Length: 183
Image (cartoon, rainbow, N blue to C red; front, side):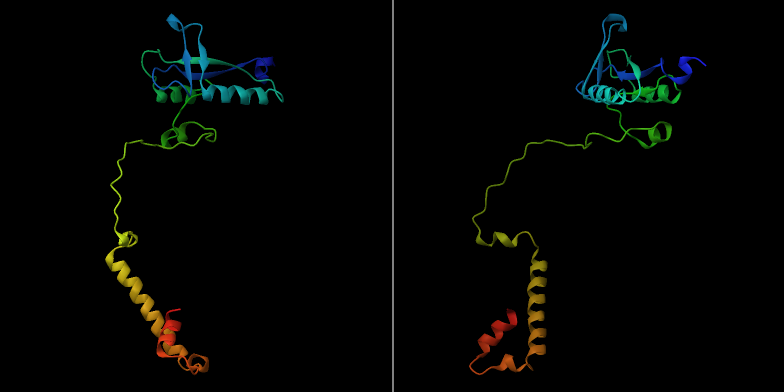
């Protein structure tokens, strides 16, 4: 058996998109003809850091290969097909995890939060000087329901507590009793 059979001298071929658009995440910059490429971006740095730490335990050699012509953004599905066909051993880039791609290849766990955000200008309405503005979060029907449930609860407590001797102490007028009902 040769050293290649054990994977000692074999270099892993890792595709990096040669992009025109958003280049901060991963990109390959090449000279004319696609030679002498340099690879940069956040995903490339994360990959290199992981390989460096992994290489402490086991020697891992790799080489990046640019994917795309550099005039338009490359097809990520083409990169996935190359990985699926075992032409390359990995992809480093901003590859979106889709259901179809999950069936074809394995992904690492996402290491950044992926959300879609839209920033749009917003103009606030002038503040109202109305004292009843605190009522606006709820509709009129909801406020009526809250008040009615409050009154019904008070009536039920009055019915249950009017037999209690402490409820009928001398000197307590009907106003105090009514206040106790709502307390």
